[in-house]
Image (tube, rainbow, N blue to C red):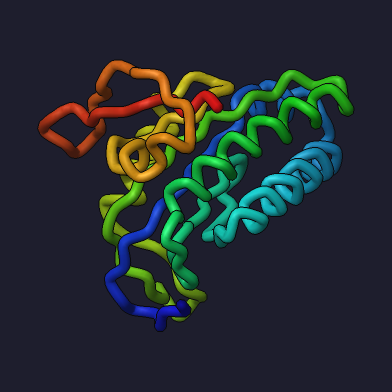
Length: 183
């Protein structure tokens, strides 16, 4: 089902960030760095879109994707986790092919957002769910996918999760319960 911009929606947000990118770019020509990131991000986009997600934005060496807007599926949290694990597979293959040592941190959260345009641009997801996904990405170890309790609950039985210590999230008074998606 498609939604109109400017609506409150429950979505699953995937936020990822490369680890090792800054040191790589420090020693390479900017055009070569751009070629590497472009090739890798095309692979990430393919994984995300294969699972029904939408690229919200690329921010430097980070990717934000939304599952549930503009099109929603009953299993958007599961789709986001599959995309996150798939992105980890893509970066491992990319590293082997290019003889690189990049790593990826992924954070995934489900929650309510406002799906709408900002500054006359295309629709984007805004709200606490995005902030938490980004904070989970920041708390993830390179090579891992951290998810919120809401994502774990929605994908339970279809994804193997490992327990993880709760994390403090900037702007929140209490710790956030998280899980690591392992398979």
